Image 1 (cartoon, rainbow, N blue to C red):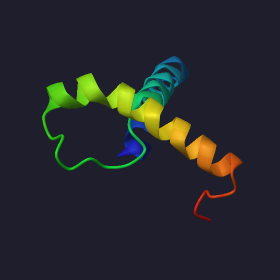
Image 2 (spheres, rainbow, N blue to C red):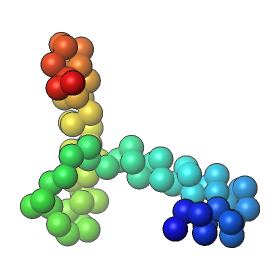
Image 3 (spheres, one colour):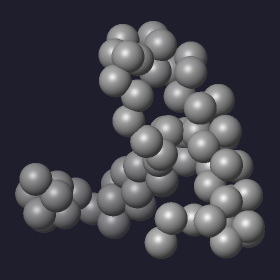
Image 4 (cartoon, rainbow, N blue to C red):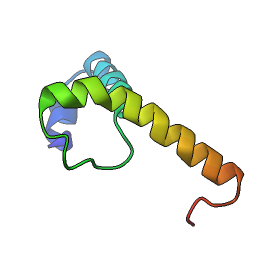
Length: 68
């Protein structure tokens, strides 16, 4: 799919799409949450959940318990 987009879009459009994807990734939770299936719940809870998960991950990494 991305190959077709890359072939059919100009540089400005690709840059705009990249910014949109990065913004969505920044707001998305880092782990799946199966009980949150509606778009409304994802929009309402996603950014808060993402912040909490990224904070937890950073604390665990700082403490040497990042799971790797």
